[in-house]
Image (cartoon, rainbow, N blue to C red; front, side, top):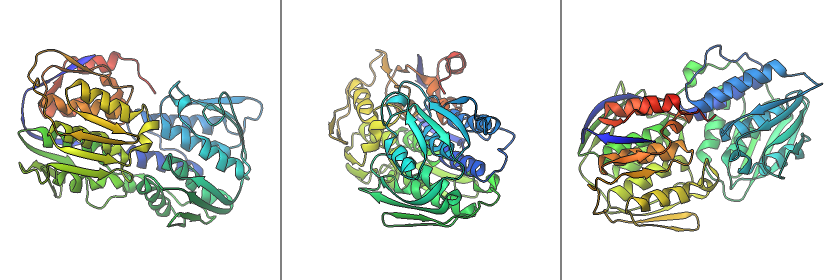
Length: 433
């Protein structure tokens, strides 16, 4: 456990955000499917992308080993689990893909049903529809048309999409039900097209032609992570005054989370793109005292925005949160638990959340408040900025930020927010991959 102390309410700093792990992981998979060698050096220090790159190297070294089953352990990396389950279906060899106890509680059946419909040979190791999964890879897997329920995770769809160009006859995916996180499907489409694929995504139908991927230019396609920028928008909104340069962010992005400037304009933060990146400043003007938002297209922003609204005393109604139930933790329950602990009035109705706009009266109380992170990187990062308002705020698992933003505490120090023994804590804490 580590506690955060705030030395400044007026923030003036520059930050280099981590690379988007969504982009990195997609490019690594596309690069592998294309038959190219993985980059020699690790692209990112984020544990999710390190796990992906290291496991792809292991798969490359063990493919065509028909006599033994190779275990592929993704730890708590959900994206890696989904993408590699699809990838291993077309990779010759015998594979056993598994992960942490929490990973084995996260559903994967919509993806495995679609793969089996295409002829993939896979079985479940414990509970039907959940990891671990045993796979006999088949390089000659046929394409065709599959139906896929689109209401749990867009990563199931992206995992299938990236296989499309190497399946015989290509692939058509008919999406059933409400399409959630459509921006991530469009991200996959965009990156695939930049790597030589032909992809159409119209209404609830994705069509992919059979053709070879071309060379992948990692340097040209990588971007800083817009979802990581959300926590800096939160800092700017909660500070007395703020001027924060997020280096390298550009207005033109394949990431759906680039809607942040529009969201936070109503919450008192201005955004200006410069030659160096994105400059965000505290405007001092809340455009609304009641905020309603549907996060269907950008669920990874929900925690930061909901916590911001609660902290500013804004009444809010937040929908499009269904996928938060099956993330690293049940994020809906986790957000409510920790906000209530701090004195905020919050309610949950099914998969929607409501903040009632109260400001706790005991913000200056010297009593220690311990925020549980639930082994969830975004819980840690979305609650850390509350140290601008709450004294003696502590986190039980500061090291979880490794998953997507390993330098978060170093960068937060630039803003005057210090986590006591933070570096020591993270270095000594057992890394969860």
